[in-house]
Image (cartoon, rainbow, N blue to C red; front, side, top):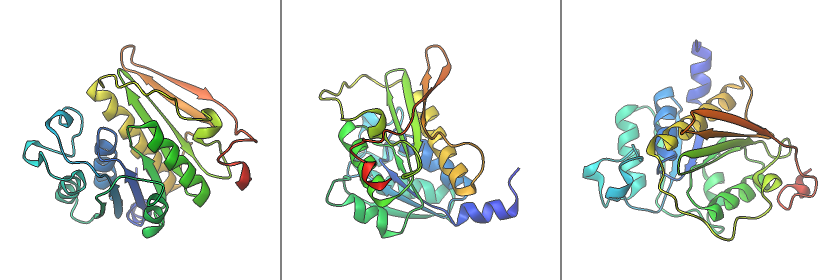
Length: 230
């Protein structure tokens, strides 16, 4: 059970969510419901009808609206005390570092759907020393891991480069809900400094067999991203 002091720590927390889609939706909603004081939402897309089966921040009336504004309205309706900072733009090499620094966010959630964006988030967060939670979903499965730069393995320690080809398998919608919720759990544990974070390990989920698996690994001393910040 959370104490009043715990709730104050959560309210003082500032979480940046990159991507307001299938992963970002449940992550943002649970963080807002938990009482996180500031949520930053980065997304340059508009709501499409095809999004609605898994992107629960948005509804039919939001079709064609910028996702960040739909997300803001949903989150403030859920918890008027949360301050939602919107960045109606795609995360790029030119803007992401400035966004992360803008409100000095405590932790970043990678809720994007492309390998290029995921490696960009990894590299920027490692360079800035900013903790982040990587996640990805495809088909009936998903994965996540937490990185504490200078202390634990980053995404490039596990996968040196993004795959040259990205498949686009249809996502079993509840998988995004499971993984996005676990991202929120990692962020809350970090803010509260409790429990065991998913560092130096990847947690995978298979919805077809309802099984989780932990894959442990060590930091790569010659990692292209984090070797300079040892």
